Length: 153
Image (cartoon, rainbow, N blue to C red; front, side, top):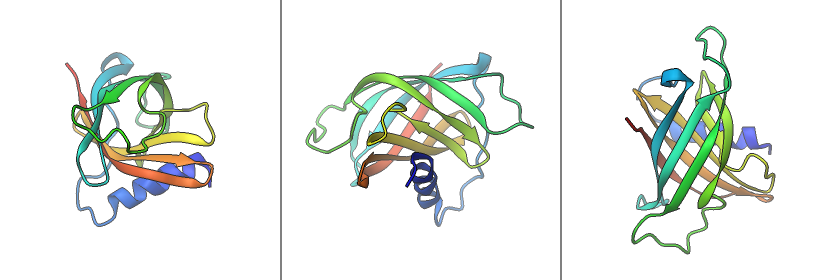
């Protein structure tokens, strides 16, 4: 299963049964923005906190999706989190890559890795993102949970 297929499947599963809004395009002033990131365990407990810096590869055009996204991340364990939970390479710092398309936001926190990958699949709600993180190994999806990314001023 390809990385994009896994991320798309995660987004599809996250949206099942949802009657929420349809995906909106991410509105990044000047083509970039910072977000406060929180990842939750499968049981719904906060396990990771940090920041995501997202930027469009070019000025987004509503008439020309998908739009390539790049950026960086800095994430650490949340206070009191179960640090034995396997979350993959989303603790520390790194670069990210992905797209903003008609189905939402799809990001890889480990774009240069094939068998140790963390993907985010989410929807835009106003200025914020919400969705599912998935840690996948060469054997396929290994661990997952929800995430939120709240726009910083």
